[in-house]
Image (cartoon, rainbow, N blue to C red; front, side):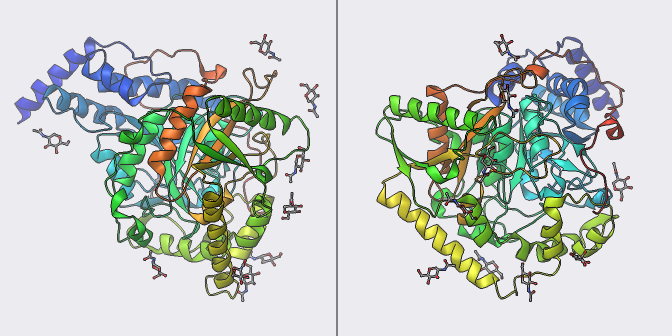
Length: 544
Ligand SMILES: *[C@@H]1O[C@H](CO)[C@@H](O)[C@H](O)[C@H]1NC(C)=O
Ligand SMILES: *[C@@H]1O[C@H](CO)[C@@H](O)[C@H](O)[C@H]1NC(C)=O
Ligand SMILES: *[C@@H]1O[C@H](CO)[C@@H](O)[C@H](O)[C@H]1NC(C)=O
Ligand SMILES: *[C@@H]1O[C@H](CO)[C@@H](O)[C@H](O)[C@H]1NC(C)=O
Ligand SMILES: *[C@@H]1O[C@H](CO)[C@@H](O)[C@H](O)[C@H]1NC(C)=O
Ligand SMILES: *[C@@H]1O[C@H](CO)[C@@H](O)[C@H](O)[C@H]1NC(C)=O
Ligand SMILES: *[C@@H]1O[C@H](CO)[C@@H](O)[C@H](O)[C@H]1NC(C)=O
Ligand SMILES: *[C@@H]1O[C@H](CO)[C@@H](O)[C@H](O)[C@H]1NC(C)=O
Ligand SMILES: *[C@@H]1O[C@H](CO)[C@@H](O)[C@H](O)[C@H]1NC(C)=O
Ligand SMILES: *[C@@H]1O[C@H](CO)[C@@H](O)[C@H](O)[C@H]1NC(C)=O
């Protein structure tokens, strides 16, 4: 046995000696697989090349909370498997970054919160196991807006993540660490969660693609929760093909008794291969509803670029033969919908208490939301203060809960009627009516994620354009568009996204991270992360 492992180690060192660093900028799943299976590099080479980019650029972007120390060793195991003719799996040797609210048994799961720094899940979330079973290599965890409660991507544990396109702006959020990391090619793709906007805002702000799936499609077991009604999990990627593969793996978990909302999955969606839906084709004859109420028509440097970019997008869709129908109903007003029906604060305390009290959660951690809040090891920015404060005294037994849930049903019916009466394939609108905000802002205002979050309808977010460039934003600030469909139409939406990218190719890598980085062999070299104390924080740590 020992002899065999010596031989394997010897073979591996020969394989490695022949390696060159692999250029992973804008790397795709297909590209990595071609390089790997064509013998241009090894899995070890792929992993080292991504880690080299993290080491070069994370000190500026501050997107990573933790790296998995044995990722290079796991890559070696993949190389042995490949040499033995067993290099299979949809994500074989694909480096993935997880938002740090996904439970992992070998890395603490913190939500970016100092009070959860020692929180140790003893099992991987089912979606994390699904990635590993498909051959993926989890590279590490990304920063987020603390506990996913806002869109600024600042946390007491991880500090402020910086937008790679404009270092004076946030990367959106709450999945902003993943957004910045994937834009900078720190991994092939990453994951996020979305209670109101959080998979879509970072995609929009970093020129990326994301999918917020239909309510129930992907199990949320083992993800730090906020809301039973509104929470969703999904992938964030640099292109539609990778997004479809990642979605297929995540949705492949299927029915999960640990998250009963997955009982809603129709048999037609069970085991669906979303890559097979990317048939391309033609936008001619398709009908898109443009939600007028989701724009801010007050001219300013923050809003006019969004209005101009979406105007150009509508022109491109129309030129390609699609029909764009203006949707002007007053129902579609994000702040009004949010005020009336956002149900998070009635569900938050119960959900968090359940997550924190699980016997399978080891390490040092509070056992209730109240304990977490009163620990003081929690960054409460003004926009979150009343949310958490009210959550602590709210519950689903509150008299307001049932009427709000009825209101959500009404909204959902209104949305279905909008699709029917206008014969729509999808609704389109800017994720954010203004540019992603500057670091230090009190909130990520102007976002339109609430409609899909409440109705539970799927959305694919695509890059739509950039604002005019400036000294702070050398190639402009990214602007994203949401494509919202009827439930269980992820395949159709992904194919629309693919056709949209064909008529309007938008994504560009950030100029601040465009220089290539040569990978160093990590044999015996410890992975050293930048000291987060060096990263300027927009907010003081502690309870206000
Ligand atoms: C191939 O790899 C899979 C997954 O790692 C493993 O379960 C299986 O036993 C391997 N098969 C062979 C023939 O080594
Ligand atoms: C993870 O949690 C354990 C147990 O609470 C703690 O000892 C350890 O320092 C934590 N790891 C990190 C990297 O913070
Ligand atoms: C899930 O469980 C809750 C509480 O028991 C129940 O109200 C709800 O109807 C269930 N949902 C589904 C989709 O089964
Ligand atoms: C619309 O944009 C203007 C200019 O940026 C801003 O002052 C205003 O608050 C925005 N309105 C809304 C409803 O967000
Ligand atoms: C708006 O943009 C213009 C042109 O880039 C610039 O001159 C002006 O100072 C900006 N206004 C504000 C309020 O930032
Ligand atoms: C949207 O709703 C808000 C109240 O939440 C209201 O102040 C605003 O005027 C509405 N906007 C439009 C265009 O009706
Ligand atoms: C909520 O805020 C009020 C003051 O607005 C304060 O008295 C109360 O202690 C806060 N609740 C918690 C749990 O911190
Ligand atoms: C019901 O919820 C509201 C807002 O979430 C809160 O202000 C109120 O105190 C709650 N009432 C009870 C009886 O819990
Ligand atoms: C929902 O619709 C019903 C019937 O159309 C109506 O009576 C009720 O007031 C509506 N509720 C809300 C919260 O909009
Ligand atoms: C904007 O981009 C153009 C073309 O690359 C460049 O010539 C110009 O200097 C840039 N402007 C600023 C303010 O960076």
